[in-house]
Length: 364
Image 1 (cartoon, rainbow, N blue to C red):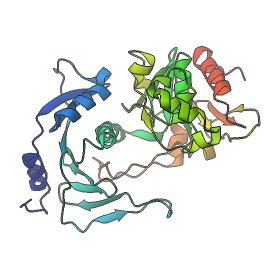
Image 2 (cartoon, rainbow, N blue to C red):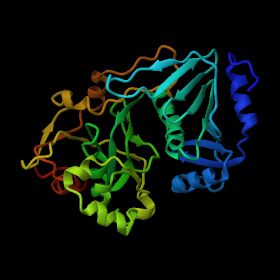
Image 3 (spheres, rainbow, N blue to C red):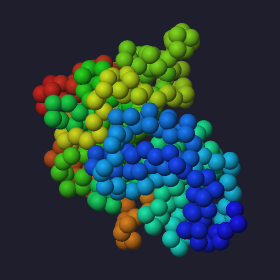
Image 4 (spheres, rainbow, N blue to C red):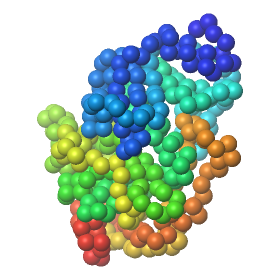
């Protein structure tokens, strides 16, 4: 691109001009409305299917923000990028970024995707059709940005709702947050969120989820009757031969589209904030037990749900600082915290936590 790369607006306009996005869809995140323009028809169709229940059929609402999506061959920007170092030295460096006067250019080093954000503009470019999930995450990140700018705390968690109660489910990566949430859907609950929640810092209601469909591993699909259709007959045989430990470690992921697996109107991305379940269990033969704590007593466990904002968040308030554990404790101060100890037992956890949604007590 022959352009002044120090000028964010010129770089943005060059991308949009070279790969014009003319396919439009409008997505409603509760009352937050996003116009999405896509240059690839196949990708536009895939996104419309993914967000189907949240597509505005007859767009008349005021739009809160716009995202442009540009499927393109590998791009090149001549910046001296700053590396985003991972928290663990054993993990790969995924992102690097350049800060310009009016915006930020972020490069995903592994997938060669670029994000251009700032001054109210949102653009993603690169092999978007191949990396649909990154496009989905970017669209969701615009809602997250809006909520954080309005004082919400970002949490790493799944969530479900039923009978006017909402339950946030969190734990270490790989603990089974999505698996437990989906077992609860099979037991009658509705889905709120897969991986991110936005919690009001005042402790008021409701909390919000994002519009990300669950990403599940083969073991989750194999052991839940509502999800088995995701696997082919051959895959069911192959995965059925694996040991539980091997299945647990299998990294391959499937999209579990909620309306296809559970029926329409079961994905409700907001709920009253009633309680938090924290998975502190282990893969052993001990009986599962639930300990009910206050937020202050559960201080150590609540760190599992804290999520630091990433490079896709550019604060509207220049004086913004990341929230602390005390902010999360304050937001949850009058909510029961259910800590799941002992061995992994999805059936028992589902039974106890569904009882809470139905009655207000786990019966423990």
